[in-house]
Amino acid sequence: MTVLVFSENMEVAAELLGKGKELAGELGTKLAAALLGTGVKGKEGELFAYGADVVYVVDHPALTPFFPETYADALAKVVEEAKPEVILIGATKRGKETAPRLATKLNAGCAAGATNLRIDKEKRLLIAERPAISAMVVATEYSKTKPQIATVAPRTFEKPPRDDSRKGEVVEVKVDLTVPEKKVLELKKKEVKGIKIEDAELITSCGRGFRKKEDLKMLEELASLIGATLGCSRPIAADLKWLPEDHWVGLSGHKVKPKMYMAVGISGQVQHLAGMRDSKIIVAINKDPEAPIFKVADYGIVGDLYQVLPALINYLKSRKG
Ligand SMILES: Cc1cc2nc3c(=O)[nH]c(=O)nc-3n(C[C@H](O)[C@H](O)[C@H](O)COP(=O)(O)OP(=O)(O)OC[C@H]3O[C@@H](n4cnc5c(N)ncnc54)[C@H](O)[C@@H]3O)c2cc1C
Image (cartoon, rainbow, N blue to C red; front, side):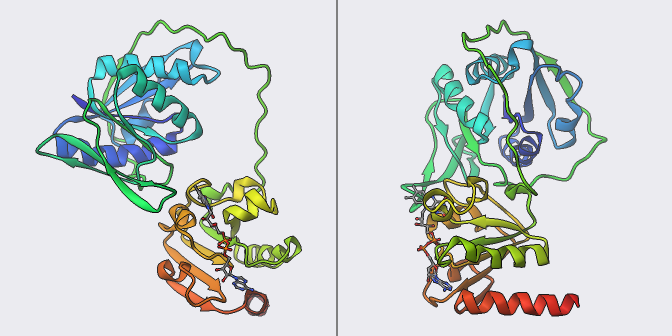
């Protein structure tokens, strides 16, 4: 019996290993990780360094390019070998496609997008908390079948400290994988300008408090003065299309955890908070003192952003000389 962790993204795998270690400790089992792909053999060290005791490797040409069906097949084989009680899968785009397919194969339940995980020791159950009904409530779920699967969004849990001296057991899993009857005709790398919002340490984020697209220049200027990345609420990206979706923060956007998140003209509805409330320091600028964003803010300025932002920019410029 083990706790098994999988993400094709090593950063996310490390975060899951951190949480997985805690759950494995509660269950008194080993912590295992699955390493899937083509030419991945020999890359187990990264997973040991973040806490895996055992790494199950499936190195197969059919695992490139990515097809969720093939990954689910490979993972099902790993599950046969590892016999995990709990499986944690990174809720990356690929993970979100793979996890339900694996759950169906195993006839197991899957808590999607868990934001907290714990063990009921007596019943040996994984208890998952996740936002439900447009994040209006936190649902507490467990599945009656085993293994219990949960997907977890990037940045939900802290990455544990890396320990390169850690070693572990490598298990090679042989699988007969068939390539699905689909062809990838072309792969185009998505162009990302600047830092990816999930990796940003400082974020200045805009909402519907801005009257027109041109006014975002103020926020861009502030961002460049402090070295921040631009974020936004859903209406700015999805409805008004003033910024690309890469900047969208929230339940249906990106989950971020920067050192500082500045929400400017954002009301702070639960769906927005779901993506940024774990930021270390939250600063809010809003003209409505009752705006919900102030409930989660560490520092708040009640004021008109059209006065506050120019004042901030002038102050920062004067300090820079
Ligand atoms: C299933 C579902 C998923 C969703 N997912 C997301 C998501 O991922 N991310 C997200 O952001 N939203 C999401 N939403 C939408 C969310 O419910 C809100 O509608 C949205 O976050 C509101 O965006 P906002 O704060 O920019 O706008 P508003 O709620 O309109 O707030 C604008 C704020 O600006 C302030 N303001 C106005 N003028 C000024 C000024 N001159 N100076 C200072 N302040 C000013 C106002 O007081 C107000 O608080 C989702 C909704 C649903 C149903």
